[in-house]
Image (cartoon, rainbow, N blue to C red; front, side, top):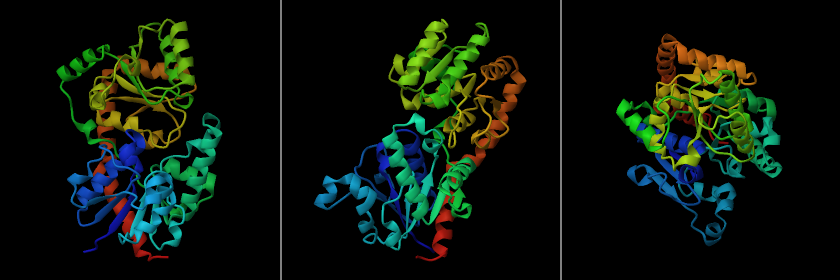
Length: 384
């Protein structure tokens, strides 16, 4: 039986509580559980309680050991970790978030990189210029030097080809999964108690995501004003700065203070309540202009929650035939979809059934199976 030593850039698994961290933890857990014959080495600048590696006999956290590496942990992760790969006889190294160590292509170790999106290339004006320079340098290097690129959607694959002129045959698509907690159905009493705990309405639409211009929360608020008070309230889970100030000003200007609930400002929201928050919603409204995958869509599908989302980008990949698709730049399009969800119970039932069916493509086990096959295919081609 083939037994591999697989290394990961595990910084996000230990330090990021949201998207990139969830992707890293879910993939590592699924691989270690479904393919226990292999050994998994987690290279991390520091260890936290976010990932309990000690519960897996085949997972081995690796910290910087040399004095200089302990002092400059970031440099160790981005460059000098290559010296530790030979010590652990690593067969393949997987950068889980847009980067691989500089110089790894000279070590003889096969390398892969997961690219989640290139939004900073498409909308550079929405980022700090220094950040764009840094992200671009790391992403271009990874796409150039990695033996194989994993894109989390066809949209992301197309962007890599367009922006970095990467040969499409070098890129494999492996969809991401979401936390299995969203598959667990919560009783109505549990949802009701959760809503009371956070002082939320019993009926509501839901928005999940950062409050930034690209994600278009203002589009929902403008749609609400078009419904002449007939709209359900909107619960917003997410935070922001400059764009959020504009959003709050619009809420006040339109007299929507009693209809828009900014959950981050009301209480310290517990992540374990998120599945119940989805399940209590009339629909998730996700009118983003562009995403790499759109994980809230998948979380909603597993939660049996209807989805209203945008045309184009990756959204049809994630939402399939289950979602209602709108023009995010036309608030009347969003308003019409909201009306349909509020008024058509047969439509909602169909969306829920289609959503559960479509979500089966994005299980953690399926993601792990696809990624493991990519590892094996790369190793079959031989080392450099």
